Image (cartoon, rainbow, N blue to C red; front, side):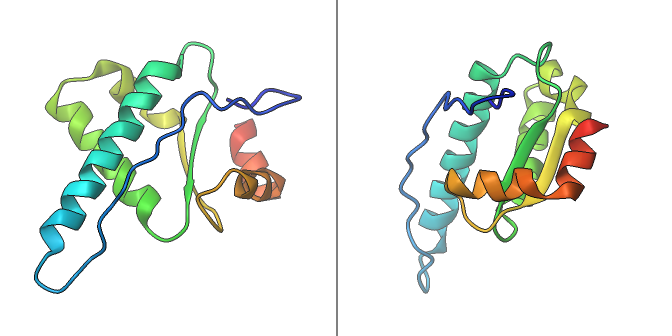
Length: 118
């Protein structure tokens, strides 16, 4: 959670995702699905959508898009009204890495602050 003066880490998700190897891509996909599920459960557990104005999903590459698609498919599959009703609060943004210091880079971007203000 980001407040006016500080950033709070509500959940740390540490998941081992096997590498993509020739002929053994199922393990990679299975690990990725488990990671996405853990992140989604963390969002559902720690984010109060009545208070939060927006949720930033930032990552390098296409991980943010894949996670967002996974989360919305799971929300439809499990009929999760909380995620479906707050679909407009999610912002997908490019970040240089998946670590906390890249959050500062994302928040310094004027385009991101303009989107967050809306």
